[in-house]
Length: 374
Image (tube, rainbow, N blue to C red):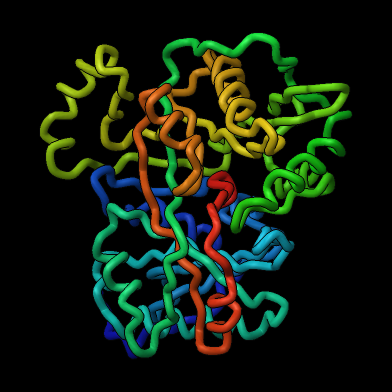
């Protein structure tokens, strides 16, 4: 049965809603050329913990108590204009298909999210990302309609999916090695020095790197580091999150649906990734925690990515993903060198009237979101 909007309740999710939250994510795909569902099995809240130390969800509930949709809000410390600032991230905006397109449904959901934000005065900034392939959502939410929060676009997040089928050349003369637990204090210091130059990059502390919830499944030996003069000058991690976060191919649109088989036949010759069948779970890991000293940042980052990529070969990954911001010259090099597929998402600061001033004060700067925590 499909209920009218006035019969739907919008309220904070309860612990007992956890199975329903996972069901909604499994059953609602993101529109685009490649339609993906982002599952959070076996536990929604354990997966959400990597987004930040505070996490809440608003659910839309029908009169029987069934969950029809949700929106997630997490908070964490990010670099904003080179200072650590508490920022909220809005994500997982999902509605069952029968309820999509109802303006009042979305408006009431955002009102409930606003109430969460107002109850957290320490968090004055909020952000979100919308895939550029998702034209309806991008068009509607960026229209800044009356009664909705304001969406101010501040950049683009470029996610590169790199197929794992050939070794890469690693520059000679660099002291590259796997990380160790003893490296964690220096890794945290390096990450802070490097990432503060970027807008909305995560503030990593040693405690974060050791936290089994914040860095679930990430071990010190998953890092690759480069040393110089007895200190660390660069790092990147290979973060496999498939034990608690999954990307499932629901289907393809347009030419990809018609010619997927031909693309896969030609993939090795064209140096492009194969396209998995609908229903497949993408077996991938993320290159995260990328940082390098600014005197030689691009050369060090390029070497670290190649070294970590080679370490990942043979581990069963079809793809490695890496997120970079527009304006970062490393992005075009990665796409060219690895034959990567690029997925672009618009980056917005989201604010209600009480938060407009804080959002407007954020200066334009190259972003470096950590896609493993989104």
